[in-house]
Image (cartoon, rainbow, N blue to C red):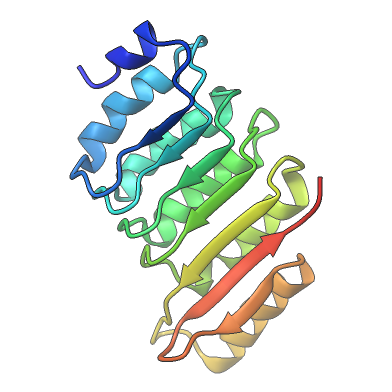
Length: 174
């Protein structure tokens, strides 16, 4: 079982599982171990692991319940706006202690701007959030401007990427 190391190794602080095809079923098993109150994992890297918005439900519960996790890398997964919204629910929870989150190339769009801005206004532990967002062909230019304004008003840096899409980030001091 994938979660066994968490039950037996109380000194494990970093776990890098990038480019493993865990998919949502593997994330579910991993999160079982991360929910253990004795889990000391601080850094979790899940770059290109086949996670979708369904797997974000389990990750959200970790953001809420795991007090040691401070760094999470979720780039190159298929989270989409629905998955980002679910993660934002966890980030807004007062129990969330995450400090650094990167979500690059996850098929999210500017439609998640309100969720991202609400995270920054409610979460006091998150010091760095980096996300790349794709263009949505259905979004009008005025809707794009509104979303960019919402993010900038929340303190995010919002830059147009060459070739389309958006780099959105915030770095703040504790």
